[in-house]
Image (cartoon, rainbow, N blue to C red):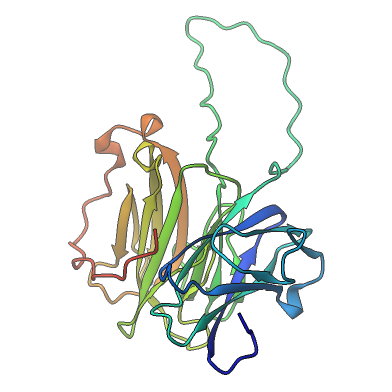
Length: 296
């Protein structure tokens, strides 16, 4: 494809890249007859410590067809610019790209193992660590704070905060074979946004509008074994937590702006009984608004 030809159209998106070694795969195209080529390049102001390695013989910076991939090594949190270049006669620019973590996640150094102790009949063992804790990386744009990421407690923004979240993106912090995360939101002006890439920001970054509703869906061949646990804080202090494979969360009246967001994953077999998992009784939220389909 002639990348300089006037009969091409280009769409560029920012893709966050967490610290680590990753592979970015060109999974599918909405137009299989005229699939776009995908250009992957470092974001100029976030290129420090970022290496992008294409396959031998590949055109530099370009994933030419479905099935191509590129390896990305990030020594610090950064971002790449992903540009789809489509022929003007193509019926869609939409593609699905999937980023998978290749290396092991190295968090804090494990604490020393305590000396063995004798267990008695009355002893209560400590609960096992959650194997899926911290599996998501959440970034976003918060009023008066600018671009930021979720803190150690997992919250983007904060429960009970005043400053609204204006955009957010969720990416896998480490591999989750057989699972795909789709997400989107509705901004307070009524416009709806759906992420087309892992970690892509959705919302109103740069337009100073709050988010009134968030939507999440878990897909993939192992989706029936897991559920999402999403907590949202709204202006005014209301906090809602919902678990499930498909989640749409808005405030009591549907107009409250979101100030805090936390997203987790857990195996259904390890989840609490249904009465404890259901959210507290609150005024009914408005029905979820229809949303655009996310590429499979």
